[in-house]
Length: 294
Image 1 (tube, rainbow, N blue to C red):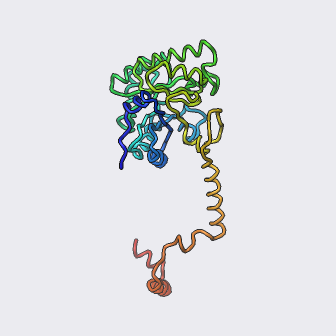
Image 2 (cartoon, one colour):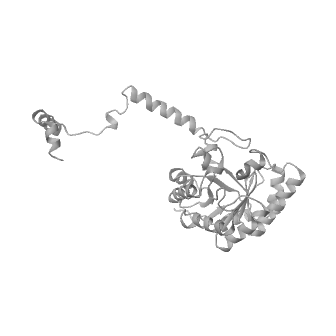
Image 3 (spheres, rainbow, N blue to C red):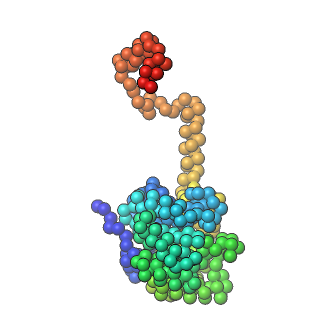
């Protein structure tokens, strides 16, 4: 039986019911289809694709066109999960008009149902403008990778009393601006717990402990495909990367040694017809026959 499409109301209701929200990233049709078949609640087409798919050193280099390209691919593979497009660097903090237009592209072109933006209280007016344009928004505070140069690296946030207070206040302001959920990244679990109990919208943790309303990981990270670095919160649920390397080595060896393709993996031509072709080849000039086709 086909599942019903997950909606933002469903995500909000999960918090009210005390049900955990399961979220993961995806960046292409094939992975998105597998994820969707696993009944995941929400798929984020994250700007992390900048690193895990495109090979940039951080998330700052990925463009709107690249994000839309991948969001389109994901949306073609998804029937059930809620799709959220991650707004890239410089796509929403220059001015509100461009922010709304760029957010709208994720919905109109990309097939997403909502967008995600990084930032606290300072981004609330832009969020309100997006929501006024009927675009649903997910917030993101804590370690916001687009501000990596400001932070000095991928560092845990909210470790002092003052910064922890600000995170709590930012979360409250994001809620009041109309976001339907808030990603909490790389925050001490105690502060994430306080934030989660302070707001009525769901919190989605990544490196923020068990008390968030849901969790998200980068799919290439948790499958052991992208291994350039491993933050403390990352758990490998499989080592697909190693399996892929073994498969490629076996493939290479079988080709070199003439094992693949064998008869089982080859197409057959009828022997009677083959005899006629061989006889034809013996009695014609192939070059001359080929030139007749020109």
